[in-house]
Image (cartoon, rainbow, N blue to C red; front, side, top):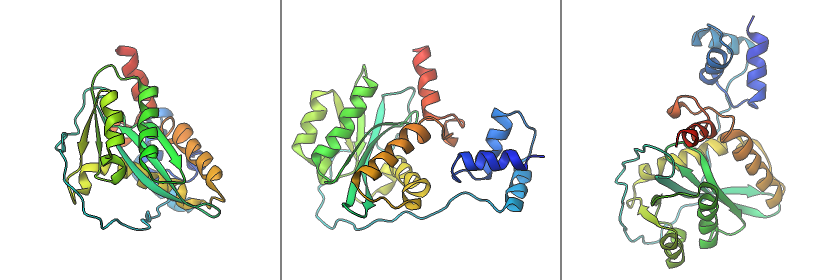
Length: 244
């Protein structure tokens, strides 16, 4: 009875959905009284499962890092959008252009990627461009706290100047504290698992288009997020803006 519908949901997600998300779609969007165990049994019968591929880190930095103030102190609680943002940079490989770099900015409240930038160089300009795109898109009315790691792109005076000009308070992860940046790292891991590790990009432009489609068409607008009640980030933001 449910096999065809489960297979369609699975294919529409490009194999990204496992049993919990398919179960959620069947119950909440389509009104079916079906158990999670039954969904799991049907998926096993159909020989389908969520894509699971570990992310790859090409190298790590061994340079000396100076500690800076952690304003958030792992308090990631929020009451609405544009209170606390987090940013980070990840690596994406292309055949022609080698390693390229994605800088992303995530809103803690909605888990939406509100700004990002893609470049062939991992520099301060890339980090600033991602935050600039977030600022232009979101138009925050009050002071925002932006959390990042201690990478050289984020500790530069140029990056600091940009934040000061736009009423953004900078918070830094502690040295050797990966959990401080877990939210944005989780997004990058999901991006790798659901898109990047499943493809081979010929060049920078092919990778840029794929990332744009993943973030704008899939992650922000179609992919339900368990931590926000299985809403999509865009759905939650739209609901909050309507009541503001």
